[in-house]
Image (cartoon, rainbow, N blue to C red; front, side):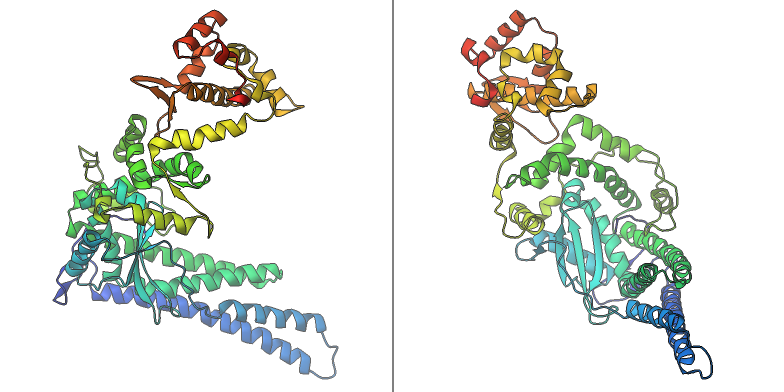
Length: 508
């Protein structure tokens, strides 16, 4: 569940409690009643269908003096069985969403959670988990339809890194707001019923039953009504968030979550995944912090913070539009100074390395060995071996640094020859392929000559030696259209002698 905030809830541990405005015991009871009516209505419908199908099949099978409609009996029997099987409650097999965080290892984080639990008059979650996305959630897991379940809390590592401590407090306040409103008690009943309806629709559709349309119509009604209730729950949880912090802090947290989510997706896919795929684990939280400080990324995040919030209502979304939530906070306009403080909430974890190691272990294939690596070493330890492997085979391995201008001039033919393509390679595809080969070739040649390859999150690959810095992309662009003598002089200035300038990439 995403964070948000505006509202009012004040309480103490075991003391008197006051529900947020508009969220008194009557409204909570009405929400519970609505969920119960919808759930009972579905099971009544299912029971009527099952009894009708099986009763009709039995009447047809026991009638006398008439032709026995075997096919119709079979259809009714199967339809009743499909619905009966679909609506049977399933045991909730809980799979941990990530590594479990322990109070002894992360005392500051648990102290913060405990303080929020105290102020909201709610018990501490039985378990707290670290997850790998920009998200936080609370739930009751285990048992059947919520009976015999336990409360849990999930916190995203990128959320901890992207928010300040006050903003994280607002997020946690929102999540505890769901406990306050009884949402996590009602939720399992709604979710299990929703799952049963979906199973019914899918299973009936697979048998081409005409009953599919009946259950599909009910599913649409159930989804729209219960998700409207969910929208109300989110706004009410926002009220708790704002009461614990302030409306401005809650709104800032809500805006920042929406702003950093796409940034983390880009960071994860472009920076972290290539390293993990090679059996190495970089500092994920620290890397995301560096990524957010890259000027172009920081500018996009700030634009996201200031942009007019989305107002389109999706009746099938569990959360109301951002504009609705900010309006409920009275914070529809972005405040000045939207940049997050330097102290990120990840500091509450203390040392994040062990938590990150456990998180990565929960993501990769079981038994996979993952070795820690610093971001400063990623270029040398990851990209250089990748370049070397890529240049070992095929025509690209014959590249030499001195050939770069000529290769760029004939990029389409070069790409087609290397790819072994019989088709006409589009210019953009050829340019991208040729550029990547030249990056590998020049990177290998210069690394062999003593340059250090640096690949920091969100930044271009750079070659460094002493006080000199050479972005590889810039070096490739310099070769485009360069006269061979000028290019030869440029390579010599970088420390490549005549032999190194002519050495094929496969031998580097």
